[in-house]
Image (cartoon, rainbow, N blue to C red; front, top):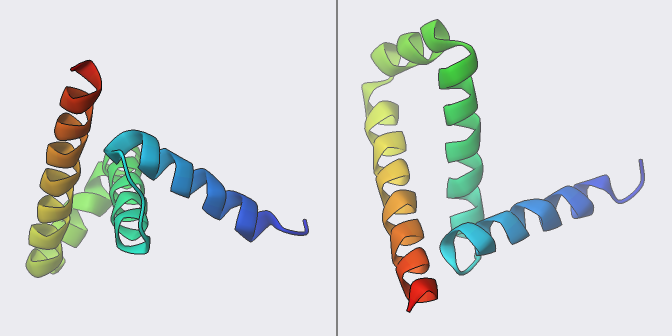
Length: 82
């Protein structure tokens, strides 16, 4: 399918913007990582658990990313509600 990469990138860009109130390449990368990790943790918990124990630094980084996304989402929602 022609242009799929660009179309899919536009989807992630818009999702990031709606979720966080802004979008940038770094934010999109973190949102993509969060989406993938969350999906893996829900669909294959043993794999996520194995990865967490195999790569504790990675586990800490994904926790940091998740915390950052949650904080930015809460701030974005608070701004919208005012």
